[in-house]
Image 1 (tube, rainbow, N blue to C red):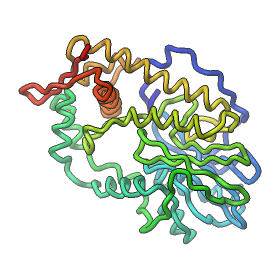
Image 2 (image 1 turned 90 degrees about the horizontal axis):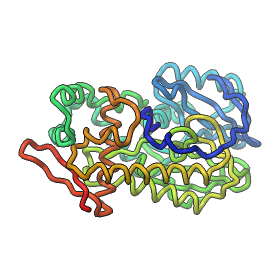
Image 3 (image 1 turned 45 degrees about the horizontal axis):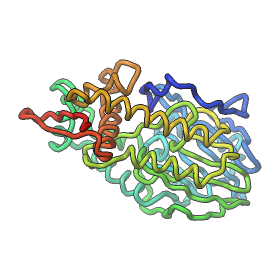
Image 4 (image 1 turned 90 degrees about the vertical axis):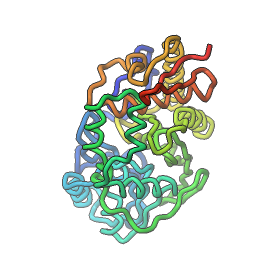
Length: 355
């Protein structure tokens, strides 16, 4: 499942991961995952239900990693956490793994409330601000052409136009400045050093945090135990190859982070078995690419390949995710020289295998 889309990697045996915690925290509660590190959850709508956020004791306060979606429910969740397990102590700084609203949504609220700084990679911050500026705009013509080329009909395009510009509604007004995170940075948070491990594909410059002393990795959406993060192509960069970026990033994590860590993901539960999970994610995408290459023996539009990559029916609510993910796979095949794209007189793209 990728952000709500079940894919065919479920047909293969999943690695045997271990989950050391019997119960997850409810909103306003916390579970101690290591000395000075607490696991909290903030509410989300949709199939995911909640997002994991993390508090690291830092002097007489807490460094927070990820923040939840902007809104009254999340604000009340944070207030309950500060009144309860966080002991009324202040936030010293806010770390955000990446710019998606469920991660950065309350960063502006927390940093202003506690007069502290946001720590994030530059590309995530700049991209988030750019997307937030689209709030209230009409859908640009280039985006309409992009989805028409993918095979969307007029009803789907009309729905896209109606929903366009909603990204910023899940984000509290961002801070006006930030502290830049870079790949390989070693940062003292509380009593321990944490290393920044940057990946891309799911988002432009996603930062995970690895602590060698505590044998912990806060993985954000880069590594999840039960779902695979959405890897999509968007009209802002139509010739990008995010799936190759994603696969390279997963291999990079395996080289950098040892298998004995406890992984603290953004969704689902903390787990052990990092390397097996990375292998399964990489293998699942490679199997999907192989099936897709075989299916392109006859030319197909993007909307024609959903059944090759996903097990469930793609309805109007999943159309955008499925299209972005399918395009990411198709561009990966093109980058490998295994597929070509041709546009017909109606402006629709057709993909076929080269072999």
